Length: 185
Image (cartoon, rainbow, N blue to C red; front, side, top):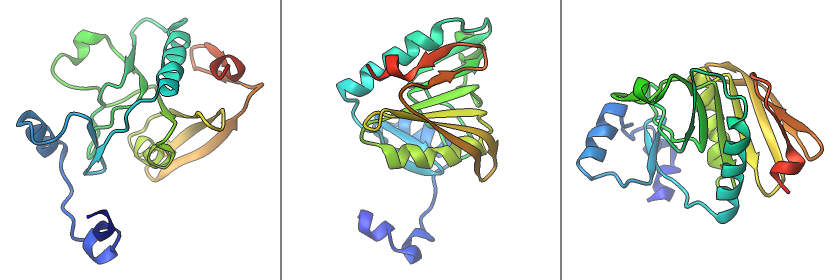
């Protein structure tokens, strides 16, 4: 089936799912739980490796330090955009849990994806996040022990990408610093 989708003539005729249709199918139990909607396409999520889990928890712990009031740290929770409902590994959103009682956030101040075996999918998400106006996107490349920092979002992608390496430090807008040496140790 995937080979069929690689044909441009077929791909042009594929009907994208709306967020609303995706929700209805999910509520009916038709869509598996371990999926996310990316630009109208239902994509199966990867299973988390021990290394992925370790990096996620290290980042959560460090990002929580100094988190400003009115911000919420979320792990693998959905964000709802116009044509997508991704579930980033980590997101910092404005508001508290009660803010999102009846809907998922539509914005985030920072999104982090950790790529152990999903590098190409997570790189493709950069355009999706930029189109949604996400100011900063960190793509953690576990094998390379680097982090791609995307900034300056535009509707068609980020205007800036910087690769942080061992010996360098990630920094949030609220002043939390994360040395890559401690993240990848």
